[in-house]
Picture (tube, rainbow, N blue to C red):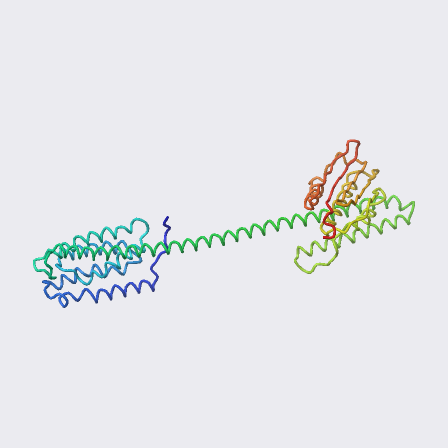
Length: 399
């Protein structure tokens, strides 16, 4: 298992707890020397040799290796100065556990190394004294017994400490994985929001292009025709002005709807254009645009009806803008059992102009048809003029 850095330990409360533990062990072990073992020569030597084992425990979280170094020196000093084990050796399991718990990687094995050295040197010193402190027929049996006890005091706390550390590492990795997953979900959500915003901006730009370009083209053509008719046929000129007014009014309503969406406020409701609105749109374009309808318009979803309307609208707009004043246009709608076929053909000068300069119109037609599962193509005809062909599936009729 790979080790990762543990969080820094040693909060104020933990430091106070470690200080209390060190103080308690010092009071309960270091100052009992001659009271517990009256045969010892020096009570002061017992106290001085025991303090390096208990006092450094205050560093067990913040500086465990320094604690181990001080305790190792104190243990070796105790082996030399004291002929019998002291109660301060109770600190050895705590020191070993702390090093195993808080030291990263192979550094924790220093506690095992120091502990096993002490488990050999200490029992050997205590089993070979001038005055035996424990009744035993053979010093070797005392050595083996003390070696086993000291080894257990080192090995068992070390294994417990490492297991505790591994559990903490697993929990920490789980928390980090959960945090990384949460951040990934946030990033994915932000990316989805950006994608949605970009798509909405594209849709709004496409709607604005369709509405503004078509309306202005119709107004321009009607105004030019009305100027020519004003002197010859005042009634026809009045009808032209009515068409201009109706087209302008419809464009303003569409603009208000789109701007209302951008402002995120109350939007004036108006149904989206559908297949039934195509004849009125063609009629407003003028006499040069002729509509042919084959079959009966089916009941289709609003999105499909809007796509067909916008494709027809864009085709008429391109005709009015690029074909020239003398050109004529023919639009044919073929409502079949499973698809809607749109053909818009003119005989004007559009063969030399493929788009409006930015490509938004033709690209918008292709995108709308593709979104509905259909196709749309546009380009100049070999015999002259321009042609738009689109096919939209209508099997979703009534869905």
